Amino acid sequence: MIRALGLLLIFLLELAVLAIGARWGWALDAPTAGRLLAAIGVPLLLAGLWGALGSPRARLPLRPPAKFAFQTGWFVLGGAMLALLGQPWLGLALVVVWVVVTILLRRAT
Image (tube, one colour):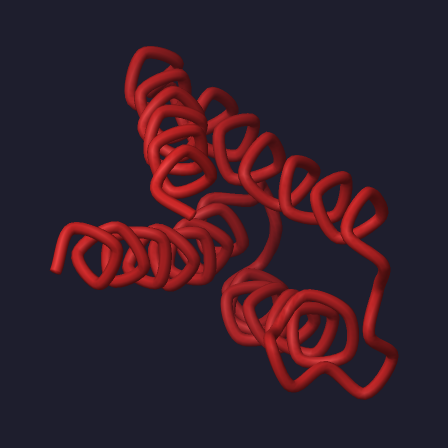
């Protein structure tokens, strides 16, 4: 049950990065059309990358070290976008929660 909760939390954090990408795109200093395009395009690009490389059913499955590097980049990017939105502590919290849950999941297996 603990493993299931950890996996659920990781999934929710993954979705949070998509939402953060949309918020970051909308916050760009650009005309409304550009902001709207970025708010839609950034999460779509991120979702495409996740589907191709990071998901359990990825089209291009990565070996464990590469997958871990991809996931690390994913959550660091989410944290960086939060920092750029003026929420550096929230960005740090996102990364720290992911690290802690990942460590706990690895110890549980």
